[in-house]
Image: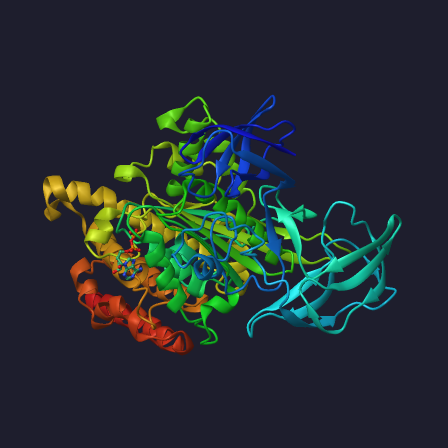
Length: 593
Ligand code: ADP
């Protein structure tokens, strides 16, 4: 089970290590640095090392663990801040007294879960109950916000059986809490288990993405929605609002559990983002957001290999909470930094570089990550559903969306929220480019809106989008020929587009009246602008000037409504809608006299 180092190249070590398996966890050198086998060639293994390899020499030992790199899953995950291979940063800090840098600190010194911690276990099945892998055995109240559901884990060898004994009361994470009699003998179940991070956890069936994940952001929910179990990409250059967008999702998206994976490189991007997250309060309960969060963070002074592993660790923790029946949101900010880490390792293990130096397996790796999203029927005897939604940012160099990470990401995601530096510069936030954005979920989630919120949802949404693209065409004409070249109806389109941008798309993430916007408020704001457009167009056809419509007092109020009307006072918006209809009718009537 052991071998010797042949050479060291930055974060990569080549070793003579017979029998090594791909993705096996190994310990490298006298210091027992953490590493993972990423390529096997006969008896030789290439290992990506999760710690600084300085000072390690050829000839030093490498020891195999016989296990793949795995996440520890059980009570204690929430509120923790981990590195890319799930070592709790606080513990590493306390052990080494230097922030974030740890060498030779394995899971024995910095365990991902405190196995001695006690929890009050409440069984939900009885002795003699039939039980399948995936079924919930009991629950512990992990934080005041989240009940941690302990399952009969879907590990190899765990076959259906009956409960021979089940615990009740205070137990430690590492204690046996149930014995399951199966055809092959008795399985002892603890509150925690390990799961290989690169292997998706099983489910019965993927469901169609018909339920929107409401985020409270109008440009997202109404224009480019993401479904529960869907995947969204947020590309944008530095300063365009990626961090603020992801922060808004964490705060307001209707997900019970959020798992941010922070991959920064420049300066202390990740550390700053982490500081920001730690301060957040859950808007629904006022408690710390950490009570329903498990954070993975890679700062710039951490070795790149841990960054490569981090998104798989995040996805595995996300799937574990999904398996409890929760709606989970996993985000990665930014996947470009993750891909750069993969590129560096690939070059050092001698992979043939493909586009821009990235290995040929970049698309496969991206697909493997995004495919872990889904709203699924869970395994187990009872039919239960859980979802994992992924929202990940990309930071394309120079804002070029044709570069390999952005362009390949587009193949695997359903919602695209591109951030425009031009919009950010003019302080149009969120700076999602409405002409480039898209969502493949509009068709699947429309039923939800139409049945539950407003039968006109789809028609209004599509009309807004058409007006915005007509605006872009008309602006071209205005640029060349001036406003005089436009008909009254065309001027009315430009005036409507102005209202859409100012009164609907713009949304201040830091204004508590504006954000989050409930589905009902979103629809009413949209309906007011839609009515201005359609009723206004009829008025223009009967001879009313576009400027007369624009100058109506009620119309001047439209851009401010989003910041004046709170989610619980939407009847104000209904009143505004009636006032608008009356004012337009009055103009038409005057014209007819
Ligand atoms: P990035 O992560 O892309 O570098 P940030 O998310 O840090 O960019 O955004 C830069 C700045 O833009 C923020 O500090 C904030 O002032 C402003 N901003 C971005 N999005 C919004 C928003 N939705 N509402 C209000 N301000 C925003």
